Amino acid sequence: MDCYLGIDIGTFETKGVLADAEGRILATAKRRHDMIVPQPGWAEHDAEKDWWGDFCVISKELIATAGIVPGDIKAVAASGIGPCMLPVDEEGTPLMNAVLYGVDTRAAEEIEELTAEIGEETLLVECGNALSSQSVGPKILWLKKNRPEIYARTHKVMNSSSFLVHRLTGRFVIDHYSASSSSPLYDIRTNRWSDRYAERIIEPERLPELLWSTEIAGHVTEQAAKETGLAPGTPVTAGTIDAASEAVSVGVLGTGEMMMMYGSTMFIILVTDHRVEDGRLWYAPWLFEGQHACMSGTSTSGTLTRWFQEQFARELDESEALRLLAEEAARAPVGANGIVVLPYFSGERTPIHDPHARGMIFGLDLTHTRADVYRGFLEGIAYGVASVIETYEEAGAGLARIAAVGGGTKNAVWSQAISDASGKVQEVAANTVGAAFGNAFLAAVAVGAAGREDIRRWNPVERSIAPEQKNRVIYDARYRTFKELYARNNDLMRGTEKRASDEA
Image (tube, rainbow, N blue to C red; front, side, top):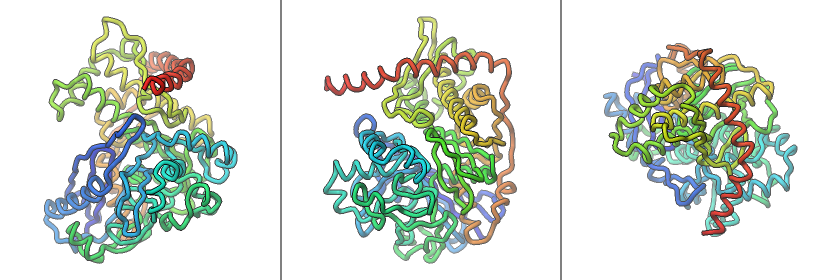
């Protein structure tokens, strides 16, 4: 049997899928890990344990569960959270924990420095993006300034998927889609690393080789085969960031098609036939040469529901807690009895790009219940998504279809609130396994066993979530309050942060 292996590194767990050439899932596996938070605003992973360790365990488990021999796997594709910053030595050994994507806001000072030096207009022209906590360049500069001894020993700076590909093949590579998040180091005009900021940040030769996502990066080495259970010589693709694989998994391929990923954060990708220029949104070349992506993301969603459960529902069984909380929220009225939540518990990415933003629960009184507050959290995330959709429309990015994916699509209150608050229909595919399934498909594409359009056969649309007009009136009013709360309080948020540090 010919089959294809996809593995994805998430914020809190790693998932794997084995699929055959028709898209039938032969086996799935997952393994939990933790996000390391050494101090407020920092977010890290242990790449050796959380990335490579998980990959090895899951690969062996999938082979055993499916009852196949390693040679049946004809190609492997990996993805992971991104963009991340992981310095490694010449052997590919991590020199520190991996610094995670936009939820890690340690480089706020470097973002301001580089933006002032380079200029916002130049950044948009050369990189397609304003610098933010999502950008790798400022985090490398943070490394250079604050951990000079590690920077001096750094041979390459990797992300999650490029680290896995190196462990599998011995090659230092990264796909263009992932590389474009390394602003200001990647030049979107040439699809090449730029040497303009070599002296200020890092030399291009200390960055991985650029490939397109479905190019074969190399083949499984003898050592990697021993550790993963894969057959030596198995082709390995260049890989990509998890959100891109997730988009592919639900058929987001053509112009105007959008993926809305319910994960630890909300991440949104719109495929376009041209580059959308708007500093509030992110740009990247898409997985396939000639296509473009317009992206956005919040800083919290699943992380926020997890935090709420850990702080206010500890008596609930952990495996059932989020389901039970969702049932409670469903019994609370639309609009959460007047509660409006700003979900900026880790700052915020699009559209405000404010690492100093802070969370807020507004409108509390003594009649409110836990159900009201939890519903307010879900609706606060929905208002954040509505503001992102509004930004796409203001930027003139044509939106034809939204495909929703991720565990949050099973939460009826949450997914319905997003459709109601944004006024948009969401389509949910039959298979919501996510990025790991998308990787299995991309592995099949890479070796010619599937064409791009075959994903619609692998994973057809199962249901739709349409906005309910009676709810729109309530959410429109709450949404205006949501925006006004941030507008009136963002200066206080920054001031509170400074006072807290002064007191410390």
